[in-house]
Length: 278
Image (cartoon, rainbow, N blue to C red; front, top):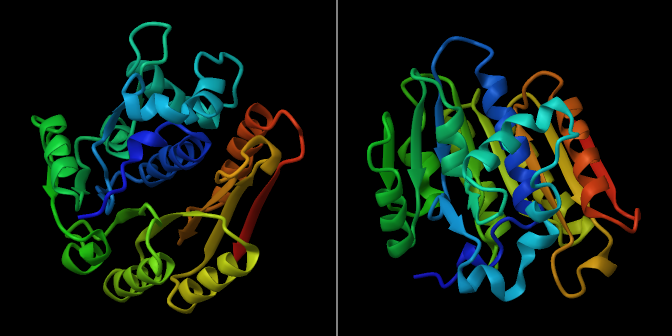
């Protein structure tokens, strides 16, 4: 059983970046009335207590969600994400951080469906308890990298597959790419959103090239790079690789990324990457 616990990193800049974009991906699919399924391959526990000892050990959330919580001047594209954040914190104090399952649950319509998977046994049980009473929700407990084989293609024939592993083991990029390959062979028109840490340009390009071979129609590479001086010894850049991105989603990603970069990087030495790869 893997030892990774996301509670140590909950609400950091990477969480905010990927979840703000994830919110808009869900809303983009809702521009059509037809139902779709949201598949979360590495769902975690779904909700994080920022007063938990693990969360306050490094206090990564202070430099992430802590910098935007309570903001009243923001672009409309990030509004839905911020509304969910506010709904999960009843007072003016930042005490909780909603993970991707809670974000999806808050946004999905009556006709849409959730498939949430977590491999860690204790985390899967917490997720099951959290989601008790949620309608049209299936909780699974299996290897997330095999989920694209076991749940695709969906009966709705429309779907968003969110792949967000911990990358705490060697070979993780290869496992992700293989999962996407299987998914695309079974469900070529699905939207696949893959979060990844930026380790080096060569690692990222190798990963993108591997996914590109099995892509659908196009890829969107969206990354946020913060000044490494602000995060000595820690991750300072991450990205979301989107297969079959919604029309003009790169503009949405740029708007959200630019606003977050301004909030997160006081050195003004950071940068964004928004690149369509055909």
